[in-house]
Length: 152
Image (tube, rainbow, N blue to C red; front, side, top):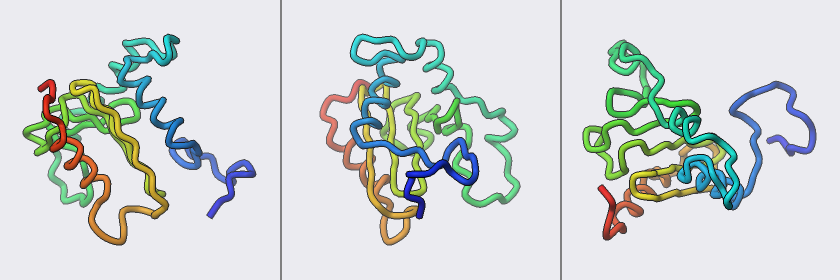
């Protein structure tokens, strides 16, 4: 495992990012605030909107070529760096339309649900999602079951 004290031997846009739960939560809060955090505009609202807009073409979302593990379909797409829930009920989720999320290999996951004004950051020290039930899935289920007045 890397120590993160030296530059990586291979450049990877999605690998090697190091931060704290507080850092991640502040980032998620900035996204749900449409690019603003602590009264400072960091991203334009249009940029955040694009991040949460599916960018995959319909032929990718609806293909049926037997590829295992594909997460995307007409209900769940991919925006600029996030998985995006386009049709929550069709996707079988209680999340709001436009929820953005992703997970990391070392046991990190997050989601931003602008519809319900919810952010969630989960971090454990476990590579992949091995060793039992999906903690990210359980966290989502329990969070949305606990909402007593969801917006939609």
